[in-house]
Length: 162
Image (tube, rainbow, N blue to C red; front, side):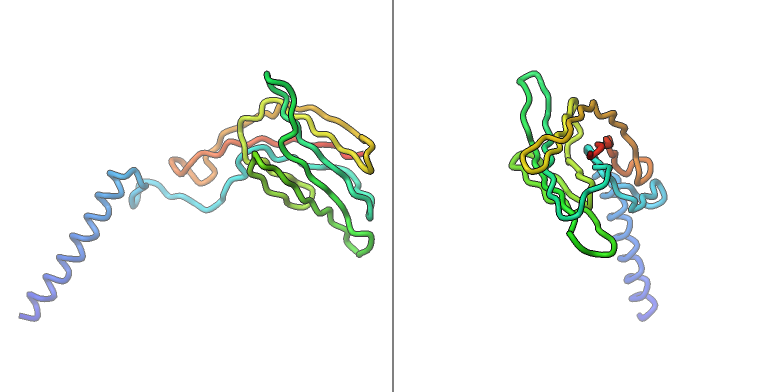
């Protein structure tokens, strides 16, 4: 009786496992042994790197403008500043937009869109424009997690801050 119960328990577990694998294949989820995905991640969209020396205690305004068939319109505005004191000053960026998802990291701004064809970045301080640079981001599509684990479309531009 105990042997039969143990057999029934094992048989049930094997059937459940087989059902899970079968449902994964039907649902398009990578199954065991077919694809191994990793957790590398992806910075999808346009990464805007603000290169240059930011003067401590000075606030810089950065506007990202999309140039399109309907004209030019800013879609993201940011403020970049460096604390006036400290041993290792690091730029801090704060952006706002009601139309585009974005992330800031130090002096890098990640715009979570992969369809910006013409981008102009304007840098100003105290109401005076310091520089303006235009780009046509060159997007590449990769599979950083491995084949079949999702695609990542990204571009990067470097803006020289005067």
